Amino acid sequence: MASKIREALLSSLTAHKDEFVSGQELAYEASCTRTAIWKHIEELRRDGFTIESRRKKGYRLVGRSDLVTENDILLGLETEQLGRNIVFYQTLDSTQKIAHQLAQESAPEGTLVIAEEQKTGRGRMSRQWYSPPGTGIWMSLLLRPELPPQKAPQFTLITSVAIVQAIEEVCGLQVQIKWPNDLLIDGKKITGILTELQADSERIYSLIIGMGMNVNQKQADFPEELHEIATSLALAKGEPVSRAKLVQRVLFHIERYYKMYMDKGFEPIKLLWESYAVTIGKHITARTLHDSISGVALGITDEGVLLLEDKDGVVHPIYSADIEW
Ligand code: BTN
Image (cartoon, rainbow, N blue to C red):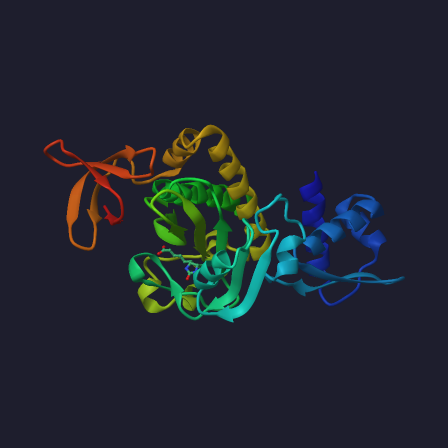
């Protein structure tokens, strides 16, 4: 019911773009009360729509902002700890680099570094991560779990599950996971995750989860070499997506799964992860820097390591690789 009113309200405001429409007329067009209109106007504003209001004239849709500043994220954030300390940059080298520095300067758990643009965004295996301004989500989250460093790869999988759910919720799109850190829609990359840590052999001091999400890029915004392998949520959905809302839901779900993991261990998350994974049960090739092994992906271990059975029945643990099939 609520979303029907919202839809009707948005379509009236859009139809009268650049003109004021009275609350009474909007209420008539949406078949609801003026109080409901007021409530929905407030909600639309929270979702990033700029709606001007004037006494005796009513409301006018000016446009929609899509920013990821501290305020845009904090307004509507439903977490207890994650993202409560936000460090926003218009442009920087890499959010990972700043998050590493902040981790050493005792920044609190849940600190989020986010930027409109990264000049030297980093991907896995020393690759570059294309991070142009205004279209994607480029952010690094600092966690301080009291765990041994062997557990760190599990956080890539926790984050994958959280992002899949946030995308489903905000965009209504189904996402698949390709081990270890790629999220795909229709076989094209929508998100990459880079988990790094500061640790000794016994324990993690800080875990830095870098997330790169392609959100509002148009096809022409991607460089030629990425056309076949990357896409954006807006391209998949057919309309722009609120980046701030997506950041809020990603943080919410990471916090939820992080708590679940600390209380109940990795098993429930592993099951969820496997339900979203495209790799499992497939014949694949795992390419590392020096080697390549082909076989059937059996599943992941409790440490998040991929198990690959070759044609002779030998099971190989794969710690880090590029997967092809
Ligand atoms: C990959 O798929 O290779 C991982 C990509 C991770 C990119 C993100 S964007 C935010 C953060 N800052 C970086 O420099 N890299 C990560």
